[in-house]
Length: 315
Figure 1 (tube, one colour):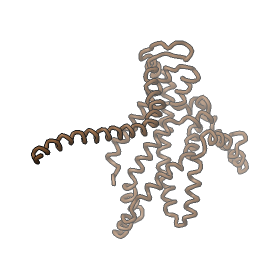
Figure 2 (cartoon, helix red, strand yellow):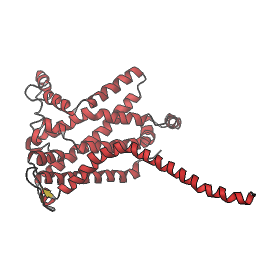
Figure 3 (cartoon, one colour):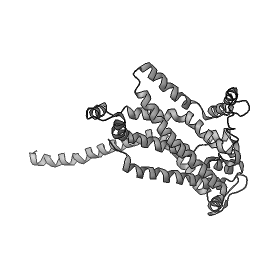
Figure 4 (tube, helix red, strand yellow):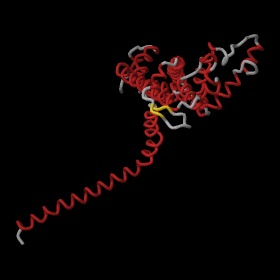
C-alpha cells in the first residue's frame, strides 16, 4: 500500500476519536450536575418553590379552611389602605437604620481596639467574649433581657433602686420599647459585625500605614486616608448583611413585646405579616405582604450597590 492510500484512513479515524472525547465530556457534565443536585433540590424546595407559591397566593383570598378564591389585586389594595402597615414599615426602617449605624460604628471601634492588642491570649479572650452572645439563640437572649429589664423584679430595676435611680419601664413605655429592643439586638449581634470588621482590618497592608507615618501623617489622618478607604469593601458588605438581617427582625419583638408592644411601638413588618397570616389566617394577604418585603429589601440592596460605586475602593 502506498503512502497516499494510507492517508484517507487516518483522516477517517479522527471523527471517531472526537466523538469518544465528546462522550467523555458529556459524562463529565452529568457528574457535575449530580454533585449539584442536592443543593439545587434544596433551593427549589425551600427558596424558589415557596417564592413562586407566595406570588400566586398573593392574588387569592384563602384562610386554609375553605377553597381559595381569586382576588386579583384586592390584597394589595387592602394592604396599602391599612395604617398599621405604615406603622410597621416605619418601625422596621427605624430599627434597620439604627442597627446598621450602631453595628458599623461599634463593630469597627471594637475591631480596631482588639487589632491593636499585643497580648495574643488577651486578644483571643476578648474575641471569644464579644462573639459568644451571637451563638446564643434569640429566644434565650430575649427571655434573658426581658427578665433583666423587668420594671418590677428585674436586676436593673433592683440595683438602680439601691442607688436611688428610677429606670424607665422599658417594654411598657412606647417611648422606650423600640430603643430597648435595638439595644438588645446590638448586644446579641455585634459580635458578628465585629468579626467581619476585624477580618477586614487584618487585610489592610501594614506597609501603607508605615508609608503614611513616614510621610508625616497623624493617626487620625492614617485612619481617614488609609484605613477607612481600604476597609470600604468590608464596610459595604457588613452594611448590606446587617440591613437584610435587621429588616427581617421578628424573634425578640415577638417574645419581649407580644402583639407589637405598647401602642404598636415595636411592631415590625415581619410581625405584621405573622399576625395576618398565622393569627388572622389571611394567607393571601400575608403572601402579598411578603412580596412587599421582598421588593423593599431588593430595592434597598440595589440602592446600596449603586451607591457603593462612589465610595467603595476596590483593592
